[in-house]
Image (cartoon, rainbow, N blue to C red; front, top):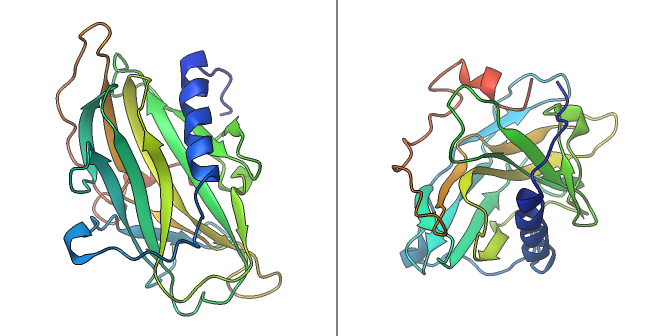
Length: 230
C-alpha cells in the first residue's frame, strides 16, 4: 500500500534531519567511538536481491544522546532537549571495497496514534530531500553513494539539534551494495533494532510513558510483517 499523506510539521522535522545528514560525512568520519562512548548494539538484518535473509558479520551500533547523556537505543525527550542521533557501521569483510549506497529511513506516528495504526514511512534521497516511502525495499532511495565500503568502523551522524515535532519516531540506517552480476548485488544491510524516540509535546504538556524496547527480527518472526521489507 502506498502512502498518500504527510503532516506538514513532519516535513519540517525531516527537512531538519536532511540538513543534519547533509552537513556530516557519511561513512567517512574518521573519528572512532571512545571507550566511554560505547554505542548500543542495534543488531542487524541483511536481505539479498530476492528479499531473502542471509548471514553476515556486519555490525551496526548507535543510539540517541539527550543533553549529552550516554547513547541509548530508546529515549523519551522534550522538544527543548538537545539531541544527537548517530551510529557506527563495521562492514562484513566480504563487503569491504565494494561500491554501495547509504540509506536512511524512518517511521513516524503521532503521540495519539494507536498501536494498530500504521506508521508513516519516509526516506532521504541523494539530494537530501525527503520522500514518502511505500515500504517496498526496491523503492528505497539512495541517500549517498559510497565508492568503496571501508574496512574500518565508520561513524554516521544522523541528526544534531532539537526535535520540534511531538510523536514516536523509529530510525534505521545502513547500506545497499551495488555490484551488478555479482553475489552481493543489491544486498541491503541495516539495523534491525531501531533507534526509538518519543518526543513529548511541551507546548500542550502532553506526554507519554517510555516505550518498551523493541525486539529484533530474530526474536519475533512476526516482526517481518511490520518492517518495511516485505
